[in-house]
Length: 170
Ligand code: RP5
Image (cartoon, rainbow, N blue to C red; front, side, top):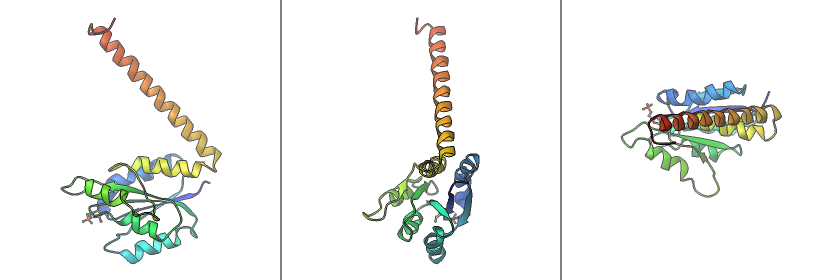
C-alpha cells in the first residue's frame, strides 16, 4: 500500500466539497484518514494532527477550509510533510477570501494551493506526490491522463460533426 494521506477540514460544512478528495484517493486505492479541526476554534487539535502526522505514517496532508482559511498554513507550520490547501467557497466572498488566505503563505512555510473547491485536484496532486516512489500509482495516473485525452478527442469529433451539419464547416 502506498503512503497514507491525511485529509483535514475546518468544519463539517466543508465535507460536501472535501469528500471529493476522499473519493478520489479511494478510487486510486490510497489510504486516507479524515478529521475536522479548525485553525481558529480548535487550534491545539490542528497543531497536534500535523505534528504527529509523519510518525503516524502519513505522507501528504490535504487541508480544506473556507472564510479566513488559515488551516492549511497552520498545519504546514508544524510538519515537514507536503501540505495541499483547498480554499472552500463558503462566504459572501465566494471563496476568494479562502483562496488568498491559503495561497499567500509567507516564505519558508509552503502550501500548495489548488483552485477554489478543487478537492479532486488536491487528491490527484497528493497521489502524484506519492507516485514519485510508487510504480502502481504512476501507472494508474498515466491511464487517467490517457482516458482524459480520449474524452477530449471524442468532444473534438462531436463538435466538428455538429459544425459540418450546421453548414459551418466543410
Ligand atoms: C471555516 O469556516 C471552515 O473551514 C468553514 O469553511 C467555515 C465555516 O464554518 P462553519 O461555521 O460552517 O462551522 O473555518
